[in-house]
Image 1: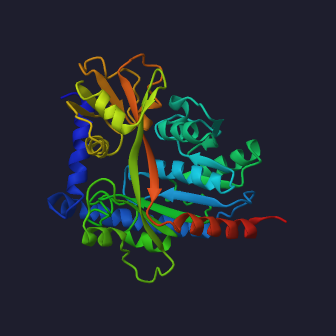
Image 2: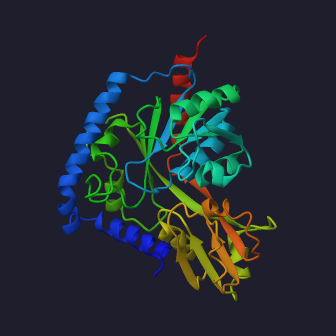
Length: 366
């Protein structure tokens, strides 16, 4: 087993442990208590500092999670950018840029940017939406630079950043998947970056239900919040579905039904370097794609060296997040599974639009 496979196996094992309160969870419980204490001290420190909007006189919408790793934040950001733009907003996006060496100043770009410089998720967001993006660990500074460089924007959406307390925010959305809050414990005993009670303080919780059929009881549990005092909390489910397949080199696209017929007699391998690769593989099988092989890579895999050379497949399927880093790889077998996200609650977007308009009115200098 090579280092990449070992890392992926460890991540998979940890997520299994975090779904129950077994030996691992109880062994790590003292460290989880210490982590919880650190979170409380940190929250009190930042509360005293009171980072204001400062020169940011437009609403800031944070899309985050409390479960470590990928729950589907980036697809939600892309969907929100597209749908809020259709309602008349002119958004810009900020992101940390995981795994990149940004330097002292934020990187700014729009449309086609280098994923190695900006990070895979920021590159995918601006590629899919065309909106301006600023990348830096200091998201507050990223906001300021984004507004200076692109003064027309009237809304900032933060891809992640729920725990970045230096960043002022007007609306907080939490994205969770079928794993919910796992065993309900903080790292490292559980998968949580913040206590479950944090869900009672955000504006909305969006729960992915596309990964596996969920009965009514399971859906109710996932959409539940521990603190009944959160009477204004909005809760809705979201669904991410494959809408088309795109050939990476030519740009040719096919609808799912025609693509299933196209690969019917071919050997198909799926490759995913995301936080939950099994989610991608399951979505392909649900779409009717027969997989001869599924290769799970660590999240944010760089693709500096092609992992495809040793694969004997006729067709290799990638996620959009991985494909954005594979543009330079000349391999005619590469196809991208593109997705669309929908909100189960038809009133969610109107509600969010109203909330943002109210915030914008209060922040306006006029």
